[in-house]
Length: 460
Image 1 (cartoon, one colour):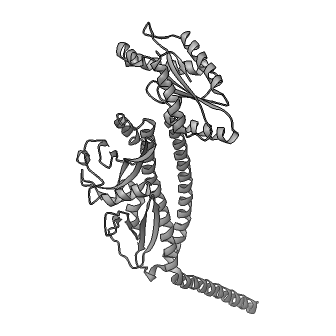
Image 2 (cartoon, one colour):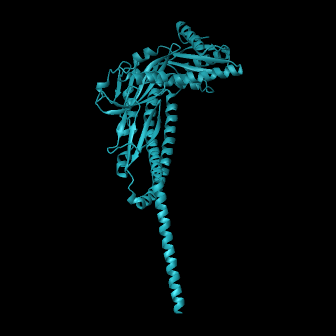
Image 3 (cartoon, helix red, strand yellow):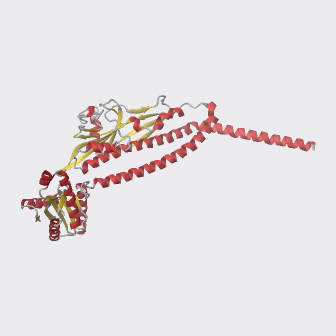
């Protein structure tokens, strides 16, 4: 019994010793492997952190893209009339996008800024003649693409900002000409993620180099206070018409804390992976929201705000599609252009609100007079255009006469008074292989004949 007890004690002791040795050996093996792969592990951590920072930077920059594209769409939809620029600027800078200000630079000269207060110094700045800005401006024009530049020191207040600059081209007399730039300014502090200021506490440091073709040296947007190179990794961040470089580095690894570093790293990796997942979900939802807003803005850019019918841009896009369909199927296509008679006199005699009421009433009459036609577009102040696929000139003439008769029985009343209302109408049928410009010119000529013939008539 005593022998058995001794044997049991010895066996248990040996087992405990073996288990202890095995555990120590296993831990020592982990430490050794951890020591051998610590640099690679830290490199992976830097790449993961850098990827997240890069994604957040690209997301912040995407607001500049949305704002400049939206400003371009508003210009086109308003036929490059900028009298409502302050209204646009207020809306674009109030959506929490991080955009500090928006600008318009017709012919490369900054002439409109919102908000203007604090930015007055930039008014009149010629981007194409300033030797510190011209390379970036010319690059945008030559590439015909939106370009991000930065950091640049703003001449109006000395602050550093990233500039989203989109070249705008306009069709004039059938030729595409450079109109100017739509510009969004994002302060550097708004572009960088908030996490950047917390990286020093984790022993991680970054240096972010921007893109500025007007500078011979790399433009540095941000450098950590304790930045040191030598063991850093570099990541490239694609931005419109350029490339930024993100450098990440870490503190020297202290061998005394291998075990603690391993435990912290495991915990941090789990936390970090969960955080990345959450951020990716939020980013995906944000991208869906941005996509929805872009579609919404596109829809609004094709609609005439006053009358509710399609605007000129929508009308030209629809006409181009109708012409393609007519060519492909070898079918008829007629275009009807209408102009309100004596519209200026209505504005002069009754006021612009009366003129607006008359325009709304006219659009309603056109839709009701031809209920099967959904192609009514307002292409000018008092001009409308309608497309009639698979309809000959004779058939379209009958429709025009029907519109004239319908309008006679649908007077427009405003403030207790009946406003004079009639249409001069021109009609033209599409000819095979004819350009859209030629078709519009012929129908416009017919409209002119109708007005010259005394108005309230149809010419074809």
